[in-house]
Amino acid sequence: MKQMPTAIDTLKEKGRRLRILSLKATTEAGSGHPSSCLSAADLMSVIFFNEMRFDPTDPRNPANDRFVLSKGHAAPLLWAAYAEAGIISEKDVLTLRQLDSNLEGHPTPRMPWVDVATGSLGQGLSAGLGNALAAHLDGLPYTTYVLLGDGECAEGSVWEAAALASYYKASNLYAVIDVNGLGQSQHTMDQFDVNRFANKFRAFGWFATIIDGHNYTQIIDAFEQCRRDGGSQPRVVVAKTFKGKGVSMLENLDGWHGKPVPKQDLPRVLEELSKPLGPNEFKPNPRKGASPPPQGDRSLQITINRKLGEPAATREAYGDALVKIAEKQPRVIALDGDTKNSTYSEKLLKVHPERFLEMFIAEQNMVDVAMGLAARGKIPFVSTFACFLTRAYDQIRMAGISQSNVKFCGSHAGVSIGEDGPSQMGLEDLAIFRAIPGSVVLYPSDAVSTEHLVVEAARHRGICYIRTTRPKTPVVYANDEGFPIGGSKVLRQSAADRATVIAAGITLHEALKAASKLESAGTPIRVIDAYSVKPIDTQTILRAAKDTGGRVVVVEDHYEEGGLGDAVLNAVGNQAKVLKLAVREIPRSGPPEALLEKYGISASRIVDAVRGLL
Picture (tube, rainbow, N blue to C red):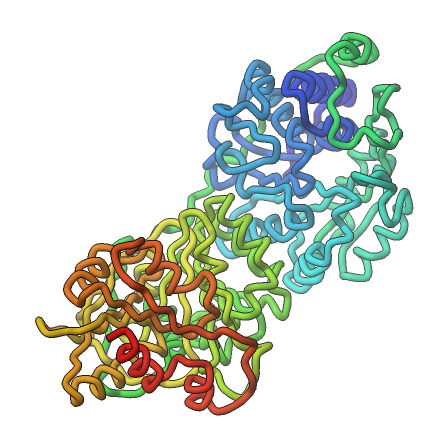
């Protein structure tokens, strides 16, 4: 059942007040996008005060309908809607964009009612799809509404989301397209061609209807039509609007994007909106009785049974660990971009198909869907080749701004993948994830450490990246070894060590080979497994550097910039001489061992580097 009907005159009055608050807030702030708020005010009024069912006193109510403002620059309109719903005060809205205000220039989850950060355009529909899929998975009755601008529909991620929503029959997902025809610098690609928008969505399997976005009867009827005729399809309301609607100095005029009404003009503008259009009332009709999803085992202890020296790929151990943690934590869910038989996330699919979502080859959408799932309490593990995550970097960046609880696994990292060549080699991924504020970056070297680190990632609240390797490597750790985030492991050490070699993943095994060769020649070295690249174990590294005369070699299967070597440099500063062995050019195809040698990160190159320091 939808929200109890609200009188049209009341909805018109809410629309008028939304416009006034949006104008006041942006003029007070001296910046913002009031014209983009005005075009969508009537749509927002019907969505919030006639369509959505939510409890204004409880943002965590699992049955609340969800709203995603994909056109995030219209944030003042969202804050105004919260004020009109009684969630915040009108006085709060006037703190827009102030340093100590949660009402930022674009929505972020600093405001408890905001699920995900928006404003990098074209991402809201994917996040809304994540919300909608979470409702299906948990058997919850809520509906998700996403308000998009017409300009952002030029982004391919919108159509990635549209295709997947149809595939999963997300009938609880409503998109509303504000077709005002004006972008930031010129007319939008399709201008006012609402039929073109509707036909695009229909081609992707959506139920679509076209309306005048300022006609309240049509807006209300459009949602009713979607409910009546939408079947199992996701639904879209395509609304022709005017940017700056209701204010003559702004309406349908170019050049006002991102510009507030000057203070001296605000009284005249508000005078145009001064006549009340109906009673100002809102009676919430929240759903009751919905139970939150189960929380599961927070301690997450798993059993590992591997033999020392046994060869196993860390990517396969990742799949094993997914199955184990899913057994104990019902909030764990896996997403993959049609690489599940290489990342081994398919292991979870085979055991718990209901806990696996195939995202196909659309990584940008996959990341934002994971954000939407995480916002509704899931613990999503996103996996694909490390190199393919780079194409979703903006989405990963927005997940960081959203303080999202998403876990990423990038497999096939580095030149060690071999003959597939440079387009398939993840060589930038450590730099990418290290740059995300608050992120954790983990790089296991064997199957035991991989399983433990998957558990640590699931326990941790926030973004985690796990880097896995294609070739098999021998198990070097006992099953009960601990791998806390921020730690490291010293695998070779003596009082006579002449240098420290720091490695992770595939290069740890090269470092151990180098250590054996150097020791047989009378040059013992210390070997550290820096499995936690971020946060890095500064204390252990500094102690080792001091013990070995300040001589440190870092070896990594990654480009020179931004990876493990830079993490070590940040840790030691000027307290040690650090020599970085890393990939310094675009690599070629070839056997893994030959590539490690050619690009200077093999055991023999480590031996040469240590001798050079001495």
